[in-house]
Image (cartoon, rainbow, N blue to C red):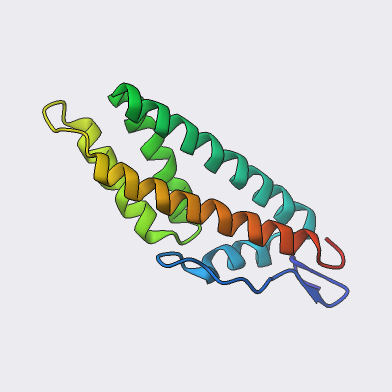
Amino acid sequence: MGKGQQAGVSFAVDTTAPEGIDPHALQRLLQIASPEDGLELLRRLKDDLATAAAALEQDMITGNRAGLRSGSHVLIALAGSIGAKSLEAEARALNTTAHDADAPLSVALMQSLTVRLADLRAHVAEVAAATAGRPGA
């Protein structure tokens, strides 16, 4: 029996991913993890995305470029690892802008990033709820 399976039960869940998110990337991670590790992965992912969202919002309000660089770097890694390519691209753009002290911070970019981040957080929460409700989870 492989990781991510217990007594023939697959821990992959059927959810519809928002636009710009590869629904199979997160599923692949969950399938290679044990049920307990998969739930822990989802818990940490939800926490990390919530922390990143709050920090980026505050740093954008205050114009904290160092915070935006740090937060966008974290978001690049999180989004990239679970197939949120559009969010990853926007986080990269924010990171580039935050590195250039002469570049104006883009409110439009931050608004779009915030929407994509909210979509990803909702998707991860949906996957977590569906996974937690599976037999053997």
